[in-house]
Length: 198
Image (cartoon, rainbow, N blue to C red; front, side, top):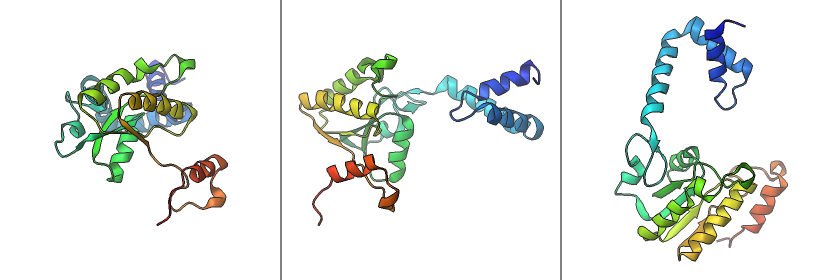
């Protein structure tokens, strides 16, 4: 429509999550019309990140080093490992400031229909790590989807068989949430996960 170079830029921007044809076109035209310097900076940053960012050898998080900053931090509690599906989940937990242990990033979840089995998400690497590092508690923080629950169940069973205590993050009604706006599945989880009131 605009020419092969602009059309390629628009098409390339569509690889981003939530970016459809109109959004991609708007971004491309904005950079070309008003912010070419920003576009060049973005191009350089993307190329550098694509070449230099890899997975942490210990937890599979994204990093530029062999070990990420969390794994390399001696003040972290090495007896606790939290399993998450993505680096974004890890960053969400870190931003809460409430967890001081280590992580293991699956980079996905079990999905037999899509051909994603335990080997694709690093379950054997996780089990080896639990044994080699004498981890005392494995915290399952996978998403509350059917796939996330199946993944948590599978990993939990394997870890328990290896003698590791397994816990699951709590889920239910969000802080500040009003019950009338909470869906039935979330309310059911909240009732099933209730604990003693102090």
